[in-house]
Image (cartoon, rainbow, N blue to C red; front, side):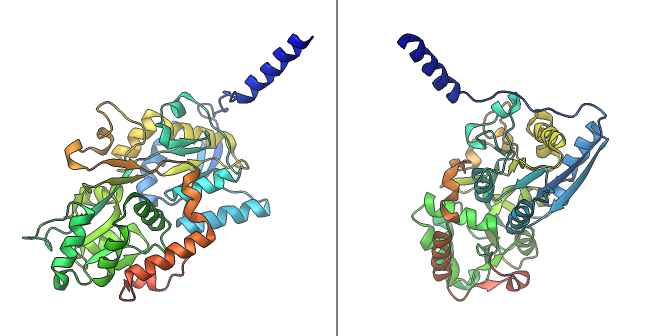
Length: 367
């Protein structure tokens, strides 16, 4: 009897450690449904992905809602509290906010061989899924830097700013981390990665750094010659603008190159779960990843032939150590209210009172 009891207890322990492997039900060809996507990705950037999915599932009506990360987060939570869920897919570059929502038990599980093909740092609990792998770069206007040494690292950027204060005054730009959720995420990751973050922020502040809430506004300012160089720019947006004809140049920092992962999850209360799982499975598939890469200039999270740099369309010599920001609970550290307030206060102190806001940012309030 004692042996039987031990065997029974052992079986319970083993079952408790097993994850269910049942794959979600997907839509069949020609099956009609609806799908609402909440996303921080610009509508025109994501349009080719939607068009390709609609070619496969023409009976699915898609509603794409573009929101800034903090607005998306607030709207999603408000709908959860009211019991009137609208989003079937939540897709955001603010990885920390996405992880917090998943950690709070608001995401559905999704299992498939395509999930297993993701790098370990690009999925968490089979509930949060990294779909893209986007280097964070320095972007400059070659006309303005003609004849000058182009900084190739954070240390070189700080040296350049210190050596020629007259030239760099109001000619350096970055995110306003008080209004840009992605900017805040990148700044906190910089602080974790490098002890030189404070020194660089201070020297940028002494040159009246101009700050922007949106990547598109930052890149537009560089193209227009309002600033000479942008720090911590999303490389996917830069590559898309360059392909469209903008005369800009990318620098992958040689000390280290951060990479964000645009992260998707399916809400537990998604009104159209089968359409949601079908769309997520498409995004995770090789076809979806290729469309993200070729048509939307968003480097796919899945590796293809050629190694880790193939997804970036660059060689290993062009980029410093790649440091993808992994999905996981560590991302929630700087979302703690007190830690965030302290970090923002320190950042403002380092940047200084000379910081010049872009016109759009001046009217915005911090989240």
